[in-house]
Image (cartoon, rainbow, N blue to C red):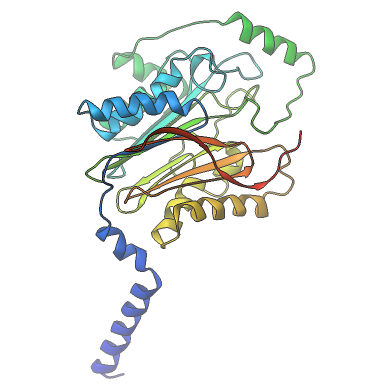
Length: 325
């Protein structure tokens, strides 16, 4: 084959690839939003958003905002799906998972942490102070103590009473939008176009001791790519993990898919590939690098909080199926 022929084929292949993935080039040309945008899952996202907005308004970074935003929910001992107020596993232990990721793709995560009130802050420290991404269990707790995080050991009588009542039959049956797996995920972008995200949870109520869901797993419960956008997930974590859900949403946006449609396609993939998922809710949030947002869920009832120049508001996502209790 002649040198000219080889050169022609190489240039043709390059041109075809560029045409096939126009968003990979367009992502660098996106203008940042006119003002910051913050998204959070569920009703409790309103309190998280107010805090994140306050942090941004006082000069804090977008990473500060998403960490301190969800920490508000972690600190609410009346919340049964996030923080130490969450429902225990089947052995009676409340174990927590969390992760963060920033605009440049740096990430930190902890899982199976029991005696610390703010795992999201520990996850950030893992990202900033170690060469690792994830620490788990006893090792994560020891590292947290050694790095200045204060332990808190509490027992909530009402939560323990509910667990003991459940343990009589030990029957786990998920119910859509009934509190037993409603993570908080938060995404934010500042006026300079810098993104960050966080995710924190106490996991499935009455889960097998040692179970970890999607929330601390980068690419499943959370994914941030400063060239494209960010996504987070909530609901039954096993379903999200199996399709690398948040990463899937971001990669669809990279290909030029609208944020809402990207969330819908990820939900559709779960529904098509997961067999009988009656009673299992999954919802996705997406935030593109120009501030455009999207949300979608398997069933109706998935709410999310939005904060931007227009104010703070609670919305309900589009959905694929109707849940009829």
